[in-house]
Image 1 (spheres, rainbow, N blue to C red):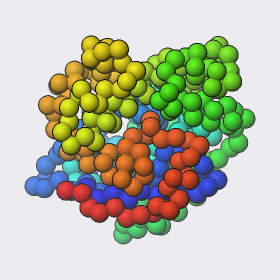
Image 2: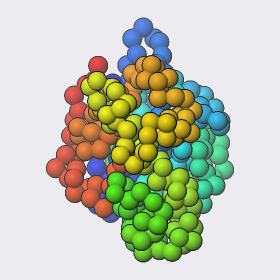
Image 3: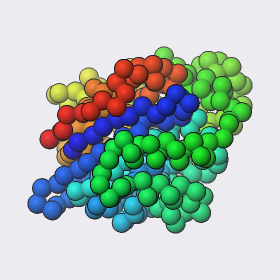
Image 4: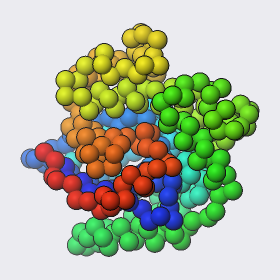
Length: 301
């Protein structure tokens, strides 16, 4: 795998996790399989061989050059061969500015953009690939596209406050999230369902789970005991959450190969400062990576 991460322009601060270009080379014409963890919404554009993706408990899409996923609380099992792709991660503010739909209505969505009536406005992204691959030219097309559909969001400050509090490991309850956001619990529920896709309690559970999963994936030894977040009462509590979010036990997950996610998360952490979308901090994301803009990653084996 060869991957490059790009910082979107400052006008999009807080809207995207990252733009990245990844090239996968699978020897012998074979395929590899892995599981995407719960994450924010994404658009993914493919050329060459096209993937097969299955949102566990939901839909399956095969042979699509442009995929959309809504904010998720379930794993996405995918199978890819040698291919080249662009990934565009949409934070809640990005969803509000560019999608402008009720996020809860599209939670755990997996769909082909060109066939889904709510997302056909993104269909022209499939034409981003040039005949001769050119990262900078393709990135410029992506930026121009999002500039063309950008609309102001009246909830910008509220979304940023809620999101900043949500990713703070010290915030462990809906009451704390409400206080930090300056919203009543009822107002917080409405904001979360509209822009984040899930109620506050589930979002906090997902953060706790993703902190644990990311720690496990980045650890050299790969032991769950050291990875479990401090807000879990015990191992049984963690196992229940793991089953809820990944539809398997921690032991079953650890026994599976992770040829894509292990390398990708480590490289994302090295270059971007965060191993997973859900752990990105919207208020300081671009300050952290300003010096790393368009850094070329070493090819991953």
